[in-house]
Image 1 (spheres, rainbow, N blue to C red):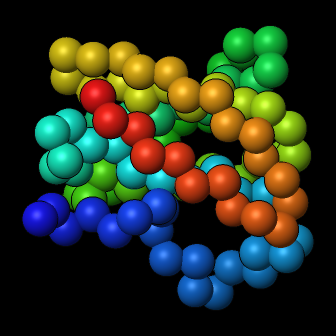
Image 2 (cartoon, rainbow, N blue to C red; image 1 turned 60 degrees about the vertical axis):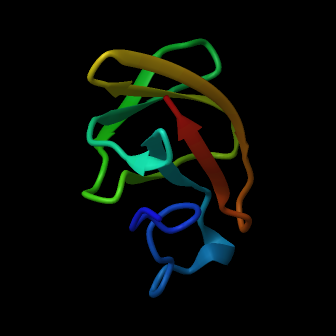
Length: 96
């Protein structure tokens, strides 16, 4: 079993009711993988990029709407579409 928790990092101290959160983890064969995750808007334009943590986790604070997450890891690029809503964190598991 890997050390990655389901979903993204802990939300302790985050006022979830007032935020629009997109978070999750990136894994390969069930194990966390290091890389980057990009946030692209509804038109496919680059908005932000974060590195994954040591446990493959990432988090973005975004506006409500439809977004594309692009995981960039050694040997793979994977896109996932997510609909983000204020007050309900969108948890996305990306397997590459």
